Structure formats: structure tokens, C-alpha cells
Length: 357
Image (cartoon, rainbow, N blue to C red; front, side, top):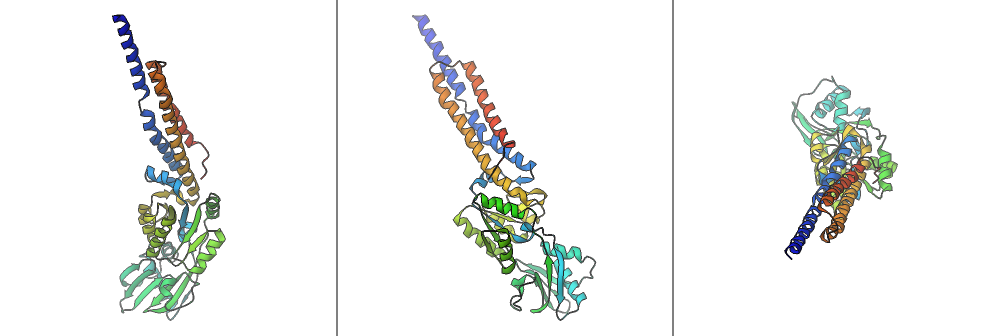
């Protein structure tokens, strides 16, 4: 009788140990971080720097993507085209434009300072940047100079066909045009996103005519022109009320919108402010990596769900088997280790599988 009870106790202990071994939640603990680490690693190898695991998972929710124009959908490598001085000589015009733009980080400013390097400078005072409009300063004679987009000049001219305008004491003193090219991958990126049901939107401070032409050329769903940083921020806020929204930009003017968006995406050649405000940086200045980032977000989340499913099913099936005495604790330990291996292998698949967004 004592022997029988001792045998019962031994059986109960073995079953209890088997259940404890099987019930170890290490597989569930590995399910999410294993998939996320593989996803982030693949993104990094393909030139996509993602700040934080949450950002990677949020890509699956994005339903619309907003693009800046200059330096984002275009190369930003502007070439000076036609220009004209009005009421001042050409040498003075070039000197003033160069002297004002050397204080700006805008792609247009960088193009001017590079192309006109060596032009004699004009001594300016109280130089400041008017966000979303351009530059402003005064010279030693007290003249006020402004240089910027049509938004700055529309009070003195109805001609919106030029890139930047120079104003002297509120009067038009000249204009300057640039030639810029679409990024080679821009059309492919827009087509790929639209094919996946993602709404594409152009949001730029450029003129209505130029934004409309680019949006129509790329087949984008919507466009908004002549937007100041404040307007961009408000537009992103409004769009986010409709659906999760990503913003792709590269300049100081885009920084508030990048920070506000569900996901802010910046190119590696962007301003420091833009890169600091963004959640994702596309290295090598390669816009074409954006669809891959979207696909990795979707498939990382899918891999996490698969991992959790297998970890949960393992416990659901194995715990009753162990409790009924059909599973030796040693075998249970081996099976438990095997479950971790299955999750790891499933996560590593993300490194090689074809991801589509």
C-alpha cells in the first residue's frame, strides 16, 4: 500500500515536471523580437535605416504617402537656366543672389552657391530665413532684399513661371530659373505603391502649375501646391484623420510634417533637421528602397503572427499531453527547445523571402 502511494507520487511529480517544462513561455518571448531583428537587419542591408521596432511594424498600417517635390521626387541637382535682372545690373543681381543663398540649406540654394562660386559677395545685414518663402536681408545702404519663391513675389507679379524671384524694397528686381530632373526611380516607386492600394500625394511649396504637371506626369492621386511649412503640417494632420499617413521629405521646411506623420521618411542627402525628424532614412539617397520598407513592415508583422501562432499551438497541444502522462520531461525539454528552433527558422526566412507590400 505504501509502495502504491509512493508510485502515485512519482507519477504525479513526473507529470508536474513535464507540464512545467512544456509551459515555459520562452517561445512566446522570442516570437516578436526574433522577427523584428531579422526585419531591421534586412532593411539595414538594403540601405534602409529604421529608428525603432515600432516604426517597422507601423508600415503595415500606412494607407497614403505624401511626397515633397524638390530633392525628393526630383534629383535636387539643379542646373541654373535662364535668369534676368530688372532695374539692377547683372553683376549686382548675381552677387545678391549668391550672398543671400549661401545662408540657406535648400537644394536651390546649394545649386546656386555651387554654380556661382567665386562671384563677389555683397555685404548683408540681418540675414534671416523666412520659412517656406525664402531669404531676407538688408545692405549697407538700407535697401531691403528678399529672395524666394512665387509666394514671396506674388504681391508684385502675376508671372508664376520662374523658380525664384529677387525683390528690392518690395519691387521685383529679377528672377531665376532652374532645370531639375525626376529621379529615375520615381515613376516606378509611385506605380508600385498605387498598385498596392496606397494613395500617393504631392505636397510642395512650388507653384500650382509645376506641381500639377509633376503629379499628372507621375500619375499621383492628389497634389497640393504653394504650401508653407505651417500649411504642410496642417495638411498632414488632416490627412492623418483619414488614414495612417507617411511623409517623404528632405528639407528644413518638411521637418515639422515629417515629425507629425505616422512615419516620417527622409533621404540620406537631406538636411540634418529633416533626418532627425524622420523615423526612417533611405541611405544612398535611394527613393527606390521605399517599397521594400513597406513590404518589410508587412511581412515582419506577418512573421510575428506566425511565430505567436506556433508558440501558442505548441503549448495548447503539449500541456494536456504532458498532464495526462504521455510526455516524458526529458522529451518535453527537447520539444520545447525544438519550438524555439522553429520560431528562429521562421524568422530567418524573412531575410530571404520575397517581400511585397
